[in-house]
Image 1 (cartoon, helix red, strand yellow):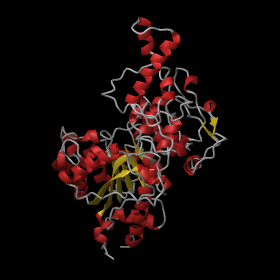
Image 2 (cartoon, rainbow, N blue to C red; image 1 turned 135 degrees about the vertical axis):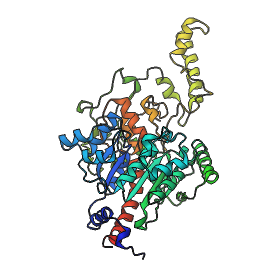
Image 3 (cartoon, rainbow, N blue to C red; image 1 turned 180 degrees about the vertical axis):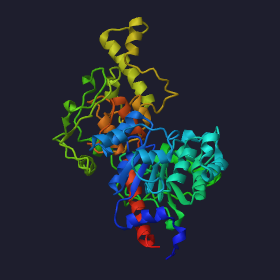
Image 4 (cartoon, helix red, strand yellow; image 1 turned 90 degrees about the vertical axis):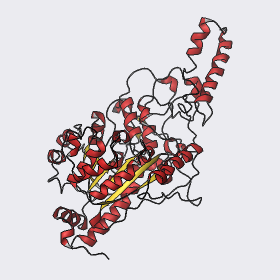
Length: 490
């Protein structure tokens, strides 16, 4: 065993390790928290969510409601949206009542958006790692640099970052590799992996890059979870992964760790039907125009004729988020033009096929109604059924779920429309509901979203699947506790 002398571990770190050695929960600050997908996963794994930093007002409200909603004063304090470019780490921890900045938290989680990287580059990351105030005076400064300033000030024992696969080649940079180098300057051993959530109990094929880092004094090697499920990814996903990982080799990837993909001995991933099949049906034609607000008046019970799957039972009975036999946000969009197309589309069909289906329906209905092609009446009739998007430019705009398969990646674009996830049941002829989207992302049924339907969809699409976060968090907690027991007395 590697022994460390006291001078190698500063006083604040020793105090953190002593807490963990006594069995206290590791304390988490969630940066760019959104609704709280990472927070929820870490809470499930036994971490304590002490605070979050989020710019979007409704997302900040959602996080506060679910993690600090028991006390009105705490709810108000934590629901405040905050801009990390304007709030210093010392100000944040003081405002949240977390103590001194270097002893406030044990784990920092979250991930700056990839677009924030701009053209800063490897040298600037290292410079800001050494001199974090450079963020304020350099016009190229951005959220990645600001994130490093928070790491420098807070000195967490461990870090989790999450981002899109494009981060492996953004503007000719392997950004995540450069972050590994910058964190090395700050005293962290960091590694990253490209992981698909479908291999870890989620009903969604979602590729994301995860970086895990520990302070070097802990002598902990970053690890990633073993797969619990297995499938052959569709060509589009497999191709995207291959391209992203090719740039790891080209641009440099010393910190990369190959994700475990399991094998055929593992169960198939959770399917769409297993995830949402117990939620009550909604007829697309039953919805009226207007904002969808989530109140007790909209509560609906679960289906009695469908036995909930293990996954659905988990969503109903999540510790701290248990339901009372139903949900209040099973609401869908008003899409009057598309019901017939939703009904007749083939499961698994994409937009070109949907468009062809719409054209066929328009012609068939015109014959039935006695409307002649080429007339103004036919043009109006056609526009009322056939979507206007170019099939050559939007091939993936629409997609009808397959009940026997995990769903495609849920995106923030859900806040604008939900055509990417059309319910497989043609009899309902609709897109997915807010609660169905939350289920497919892995949020328990009693998790509440602030705002109306559109911002709720956006928050869900932006989130990290909580079960994916929990899988990583379990390993991190075990590693931290082992290190704490080994080093607390050094």
